[in-house]
Image 1: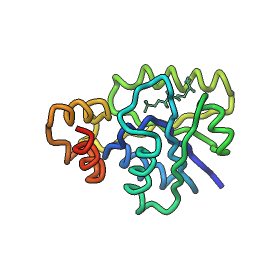
Image 2: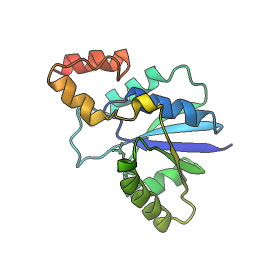
Image 3: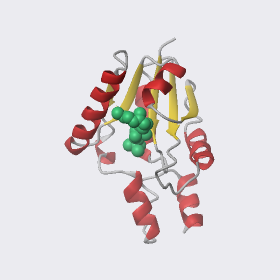
Length: 157
Ligand code: PNS
């Protein structure tokens, strides 16, 4: 069984993440969406909340598992028995960081492969960070995130 691991903060999940999940799910037997538990990084939503959102918004995908990981990504790849990591590339500006991360992961574990996927062009400017900023300033985020996240952001504000 070919499994692909899609790691990230998903704080919160955006339509761009969902687009990548849908595309990647067609390339493998199973896609494992893995939420990073980063105790040093302040997040708006708890790991449980992020997991609930991800499970709800991907109900239409059969071959998906939503899980979490702590520590190094290379260890999660081994633990979940994934053959590759998938990361979304929105623009050239993402490339340098993603390239560095992919190469470092392969340096740490020579078997760790990374696949880059481009989301729909209309999502290329989307990021969880901007969504939080817009929501914080009472802007409309309904075209960028699923309804469950819109409601959760309204509640948080
Ligand atoms: O959605 P994000 O915040 O861009 O995701 C980044 C993430 C969580 C995938 C990355 O920070 C990560 O892999 N963290 C785990 C720790 C790790 O392995 N660091 C070394 C990377 S070379």
